[in-house]
Length: 243
Image (cartoon, rainbow, N blue to C red; front, top):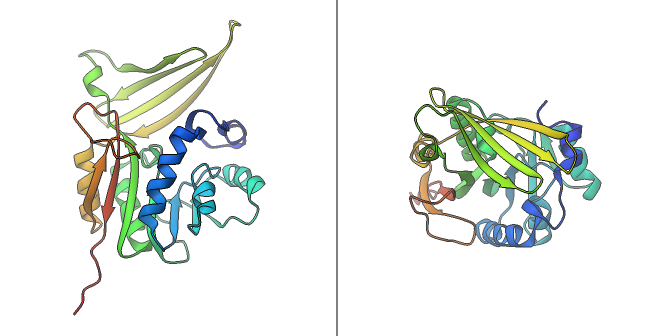
């Protein structure tokens, strides 16, 4: 299992990386504004990195998560936090929501186009009329992949190297995470993904009844350009008919 007990135990980095205030604060601000007076559902809630501070902001949040070790980690922080065990592409969650969201590239963990489309449809099933589905996702780095090469270096910093290997025929990428210190030993973790172009993501949304409301380069609202490495895309369902 990809998100096993070992991964869950090492996932949280309080105050740093994904857990730093400069990353989390704009995320929570944006999601709280989008949820409004309604409730939110986080697909792949993990250890609660986003859900717990969003809940603390006053937004009722429910989580959906496939990995029980990740849920156990979340419940060490808040034993009462509501989580349903299941797959974000198919599992129903009780309740009505004005917002469903997926952060940190997680939709790419679904490894087929069909599963990714079903994820949109599952989001739509949980939303009230006019509800929103928000996705944070990286832009495939194929422009950095010269002919004949099958890998790119995504991150190169002290103690950590990220190497992505591409299967462009099947639109798959495996991220290889190398972590090391001053010794001769390194630890390797891998995560498989199916990458999605923004235009393909928009078509998936249309198939589920959504329209694109906005796309920015980050949670702070920076304009999205051809050079943006990632995007935050907000999709919306139609409002209820007045007839």
